[in-house]
Length: 363
Ligand code: PMP
Image 1 (cartoon, helix red, strand yellow):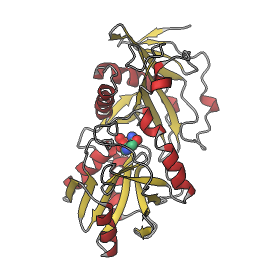
Image 2 (cartoon, rainbow, N blue to C red):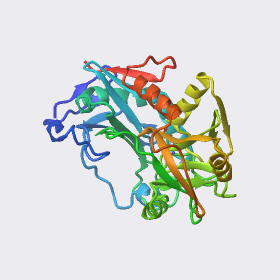
Image 3 (cartoon, rainbow, N blue to C red):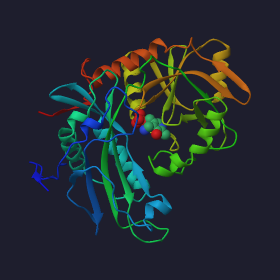
Image 4 (cartoon, protein in one colour):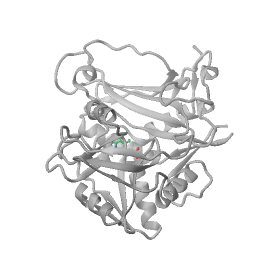
């Protein structure tokens, strides 16, 4: 194999034949196709190895591998955006890195340093930059993940871990305009409890949400609107999004209690809203307060925030036999302004005064 050494001394084993021709850039399906390469790094004897970039492909694991049995596995989700032939933008990679390490600590997984994270990611993006789709709304989805790789059936933390970054070109989230999502609460399940793993981006949180999500979909809703696990009245978040309410002219977002994932889009929404002069409240908000605001006409907008869709308008909420409709079936003005501002920065059309954009020069 033809090996290259980059200036940062990451070893690169390039593919012999690129799979770029297999990508149908006009019909990208989320997470189906992957770019040519992946970053790989192993943790053993108390230290991370030097990362290697290799061809994307199947990996060898053993049937006793810890993460298969005990779920010691974590991940991140971020995106790279095409700006021009020379420039790709990453959005807030240092905050994704911080969250990865926070998650790692909670799950007894060794942390890594920013240099290792960002250099591996940049080299991967440079090598596979042709996989970053160019059309409006498209992006290269980036999935860094770490799993316990001890070959041992023992319900305790592993001593060996594997770190990967894989990437996947993804289509525009809203090819036909914004479709408001519908949400339902559930009396049967909770997502996370304070003191549990809700604020960590760990595999089991998602596995545990599949059944409730399926039941919500069978009942005609897009996603579950999670309430707190103890009192079952405070709004927490949605599937893979945080949630925000515009009541009168106040932006209200559930506060981070430990059971909610601290979204990076959420953080960006809060910053922008404050800078635009809105009153922003991060606090507990009950489902009853939202229904009352709908009844008295003060509920202006409801929307979710997350890396995948950036901003998702919510059109309908169901809770214990009652349903409220929000807005007119279109995205609200405030949510649209947030969407335009964030995506504007991501694609390099709008100036970034915050340092959220991390440009990668690919030529
Ligand atoms: N909540 C959950 C449970 C999620 O998986 C995600 C997606 N990472 C979010 C919220 C939104 O977070 P972000 O804005 O960082 O994508």
